[in-house]
Length: 195
Image (cartoon, rainbow, N blue to C red; front, side, top):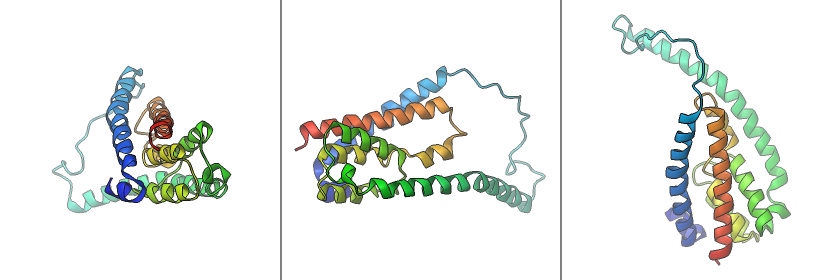
């Protein structure tokens, strides 16, 4: 938050905190309630066994082997898809940044477009701050900048791909739509009240 305050301004800190609290507490609570209402998936009964670490007959070597097998299974299923998605988003970035869509973006259409872009793209932690700063210096309006600041760190297509097996698809869709909508709401709020 200090980084945001010093780089792009303290009003953005308040905006990020306010909409972050809504996203973290309200949206996650509603997503949990939404997940509870979904019909349970029909899965065959699972025979419970001791975890490798709890089994007294396992040796340290067999525990390490079991860990490495599970680690490899995760790497083999997640990393290739993640790489492809990030490469495709990186290729799309060449046409989106910087263009007239982002450099001189202002108004409701730009807020909606940049909220969608921010919801899809993967950005490292705090990487959205210099992106927003650069685009604002190039002429982007405060509303689209706020939409990007709120949506870029929240969710992305690669993060959805990684957790796709752990959460019901409808819950992931609900959270994605909420992030997109909060980006629009934050952009409109910034456009109207943060001059």
